[in-house]
Image (cartoon, rainbow, N blue to C red; front, side, top):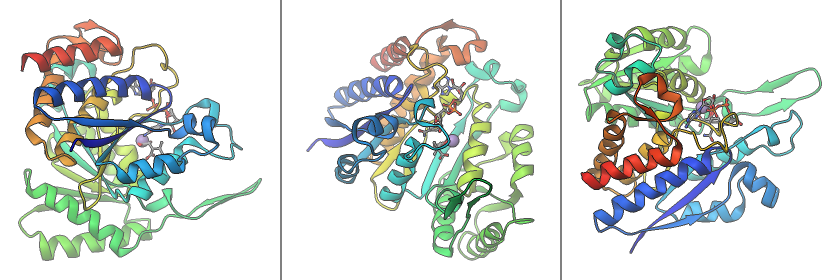
Length: 355
Ligand code: NAD
Ligand code: IPM
Ligand code: MN
């Protein structure tokens, strides 16, 4: 039976980058004799316009039935005014919660062909290969909220189970990599972080004695990420810290448009999306970088469909296309030829065909 992949293009550049990832998935699948069934559904602003809801029941149902979900991005100025009754971003949060994808894996791997697109010196980029594990279904994103004219509240809370499961996921992933783990918190100020750190110390001492573990405060970690990125292997942190640190880390790779993500729980069904948003400033221009989404499709092949070799083939094709000088505008500083979204998809397909 063909694997069922739910496709949620969303808003802004979402549909533009998802289109390229689907072309790549189709080509990679047919070359390997695998069939995928793609079914599209609405999320975010597009869903609000059509149904009044950001995560409609039909989309929820499809995500439940599918083997994996591929998502573009949600949001945009049209739905973002201060008093908007429904927000596109809430649809994404509801979907993450419904799928219980508590661990968001964001690989940050530099490539020599894009060193010049990063604001950092090349010697700081060599050998950078980090896996950020961001807790995705808890913390301040999901706490109680309230607002009146003159005050507002967002509650940040975590319980033991939420912390333990993501710390274990990160520990298991570090074991499959270089065995180094950095847990990031703000234990000097926040009680949620003090709980996080004490559970991390407990679990990593008792169950992961083979790993080299360090703990960093998030403000210092933001600095260390730029000054000594190559030292890190797996980083694990709570929801909002992980959100912010990974946009920062994307600049090690030259652009926010390069980074993919996989959101996982304990079964194989996962959610795959680039880490960037709907980029309203460039939407509709055909210039968005599709690489983060194509690399997310590769993670989908690896983690949800068990097609590790095919995933590596897709990843290699992306980096071959980049190394051959094919670049979208966001990484133009690295030289080569600046091309649009569709042409970047063509370049990856050409590299795939030659593999
Ligand atoms: P953004 O990530 O959309 O864009 C930030 C900057 O990076 C912009 O200058 C944009 O042009 C650029 N950029 C992003 N992706 C790119 C790509 N693939 N190629 C080239 N350039 C790219 O962040 P923002 O502008 O702060 O947010 C815009 C909207 O997107 C907001 O509504 C926000 O909530 C939403 N958002 C959604 C997601 C998601 O769906 N997962 C993630 C982040 C932001
Ligand atoms: C991301 C985005 C989302 C987040 C928003 C749009 C809810 O920034 O996927 O990184 O903060 O998780
Ligand atoms: Mn983000």
